[in-house]
Length: 493
Image (cartoon, rainbow, N blue to C red; front, side, top):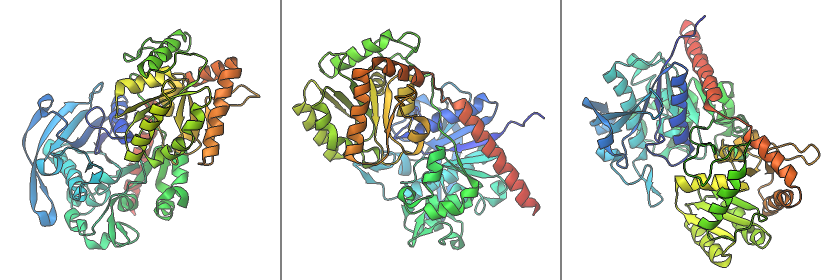
């Protein structure tokens, strides 16, 4: 039997290439593209932040009205654009009061105080847009706390139009849950009976993600290991028992990567292209990276890269605790990122103390991120927790061996080096300690120094691995059909 193509409403707060702060945007740009390639009809809805030039978008005629409970009816404009490389349309909700700001979620590291209203508005606007377009979704896919109101509001305030349509909620990072004053329940217009400890209530406050988990027909997260981890206190951020209670509808689906963008054989940003069958270009990329950061030009020094947020989650405190000891060895390190101010200042001081061995770029540059992946020998990801992680997968494709802590998607994607079998694709440590990180980096460096044949074999293993979006999209389709069938059964009961 031929499977029916699905109409999919995909709602997210950020989407590559239009707006990004983290992995949510990468998934939101890549998954709809892959689903479209499978034959499904996907529309993506996101805010029109003011960093997105509306001059590059197509304006949709008409005004979108959204009832916000005690705030009354608010109005917005709608724009659209094609998702690059796809037939999927991205619709942008334009509302100056909520989205005409410098940042997506905060300014100067201070969250916007009305983030609850901003993203409840987005969730409702996505449903109003469907009515405006006469688009009838078969499934509604919400992402993280920003759109976690959707599973409930489709069954209450919007029950007449969307009550029979199943919802899927993807958790990209459990640390961020959408914790707000409980009065936002009135803005949702869903009834105070849903403000209880089994749904949206947490310590007498509104927890959007908690409620979304309770009311969604299916919940997914971005790796199999993280699906298990979030059910234990060490990784559950207070929701472990709640998630465990809903584990029967929880699915772990590893993120894919866009190999059209992250591929050293065609990468436009790097000094010389290369691939697993011809690695000469990687040495050229390493030299170019050393020159960029004014490091000593020396192929015998292993070069280790870090790209990411300077945040506790990413293990930045672990790196700070061992960086001097590593640089005192025959090792070079380059870092690209921004985040906690103490870390930015600390690593700036490290750069002045270790000129020629350590390079730092505070900020973000997509071009430099590609060059670090291509030019380094190893890539460092000592995360305290990591739902999926993408940089370790990029690193594999570039023959840059990951050094990771064995958590979440890092554990799912990285196979530890076995000296006996000359197998694996990277190096892992388990306890989040300075000693664990330091000795694992030295272990990797010693393989580079003393057994270059083994190192090259690991590179080949890494570069031949594949984590494309085709497999992930197929798994999401299975979840969509599970949710549709589940909703049908519940209607018959």
